Length: 358
View: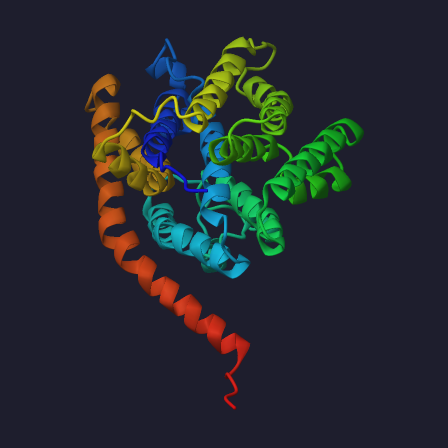
């Protein structure tokens, strides 16, 4: 069947997610300011902005399922590598250079650390992440690798439903049967990406609604995903609390529900009227903005916090990193992506060996 593209609103939601995380990092975490964030912003208006990452994962499930339909596994993995690596490589080099010269830091990466981080598999081999935001990329990569098995098999409605059902069931069993720590639970978490799996499956379920119209199966996937996403979100919420106090879970549950409802609304076509070139531009800036905002913007906030009032400094620095993200997209991602695609195709052809001609 022919699909009606409605990606512009998803581009806008990606930008909202990035700005949510940016606002959280700039106003609610201490290490940006090297003092209590509550001292800088007593009201903490963006204390739950970290939930922007959950919105990213929801959108990722939707978009990855859509973009991989009808593709082979090689084409799927190639498209993911071309999308992720150009801006990521620049981010690693920029952040590593900043860590090398910025005064007063407790840790500086070695050359080995930098080289391993350039692969995006530093978590897999136990090498420290150069930038804190890279943890979410490792979750994305594991999702891509799991989903690539389904792409290799061939995407059909029933197979995608079965994939989501099995992934959610395995996540539920792992959460109930393997509570606490331990090597086994750690290995299961790595393979199944248990904390983020319900967000990816919810996005996939929404895409099934979009492509095939809502069914009991797609609604069940989204509903079960929401329920299974709650424990990880509530756990993260409590990690934000100070020793001896508990933070209410209500606000994060409500905000997560809003994220789910927005993606469902996209799937049902309720937001198809939200259009505009600015949405596409915002979506294009999201990835480099996410990669660089904390380390580059955080350094600027720290350096100028005593010269410029923080309520003015934060939007100025946000504007600077948005401009930087545009420059990275325009002069790194766009020119480097086709070259990387060509190089990877050439390597793939070389790996398959010469073609015999009769």
